[in-house]
Image (tube, rainbow, N blue to C red; front, side):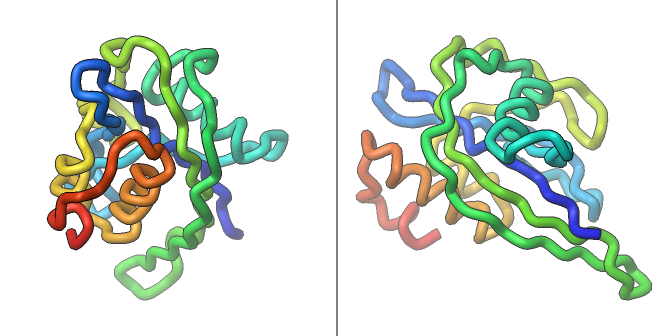
Length: 161
């Protein structure tokens, strides 16, 4: 059975630099590597994907929903991971949303558990390019930066990473 998940690419505009910063959470991947991700989880049967994204951000990062606004759906990716014996272990569709955060960026709290390491970072786009392993996930951040529109990608590093 295919699992439906919702993710939020969360950002706020740093008042000092006018640059967007994106929330990354440190966790153990299924392969036991440490990776940086955005908050996500399964969509409950009674939820719309937008509701699930906001609920998960609130639950995983302790950010108040009234301080978040979905700006746009970014798209859906299909993910299939296979076990060591070659059998399908994870089959999911992940719907991504660009979410603006207007609260205090220091109010983030990530609990240690469910693979999360209790660590988080508001990252610049350059830091995102270094910290995020997966090219398709980095592309979502690049696209998000373009949609935010307050900061131009003029750096070839960001364009070509």
